[in-house]
View 1 (cartoon, rainbow, N blue to C red):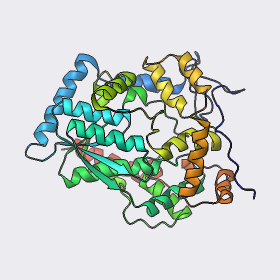
View 2: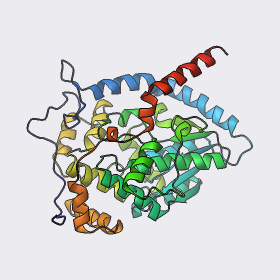
View 3: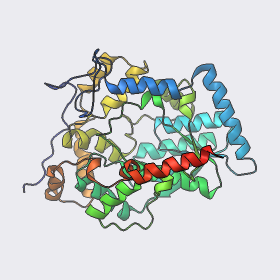
View 4: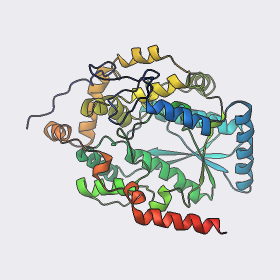
Length: 386
């Protein structure tokens, strides 16, 4: 087999034979996409449904948020902290820290150091939390163990190579919450800007059976310290209650960035989730090169539907490189070196057959099976009789 030779990530903004939604910029690079008679995709319809059912902005958002905040205060009375928040150094999580303090809550911030933090992320976290007076607990992941898990995902041939980090972040925040007897966690996820998410591109974020199975098959399978959720935890049972705070405020990302820069000395890091080197490389080089997926389409499409950018602006952005070609090359070299791979072994990873979430065992498959469905029916019936 020939050794790996770097090429820039392909520009996927306009491809022959690819059908594009008439409302957003999602297209048939999502193999599961569907369109209605007007050419509007299923992701836009999902967006409308979720926004209508979960987003409560304006006066109603303020009222419901006030009710939630009062409950958090009551449940946290007498404790050092009344809520736990995750912080990455990115705009969403930093704005949550800002808003939580503005609401008068007493958070502890949790950061998972997975070995890939950029310098900007570290600086943003320290400067923002120092200015806000928020305590920070950093969980440093065992690098050799985590490297083994990440390499297993690359070798498995799936596009879900970032979900071990996402899983560990969620698990870490809930772990810290449990250690401090905190009953509430607050997150920077928001429906308006993070809804156009194809399952084919990334799935299984809370599915430890999926992660563990791939690690056993393509790695050592040994887990000593990696933070993870069991089956009950993946269902949200015995975990602190989650609040997606940004669904209750009039959140405009550009305005939030300007506010954080002005008040906290926060610095922009380029693209969505580019505060993490591996995530930047995974989204900006690996996914488009290995699978033909450009995740900017998902983020831009949600911004279009929320009225924060125009469709023309999004299409123009998609005709540009995912990020600097020089940085793509540097990141790729860095990833290969940090994983201890040779150019030949990395080429083997890139040339291996492509797989999907459905090719491996998962909790999702258990939940689709008859035993789980029967148990769920019995549980619901029992609850209804109480």
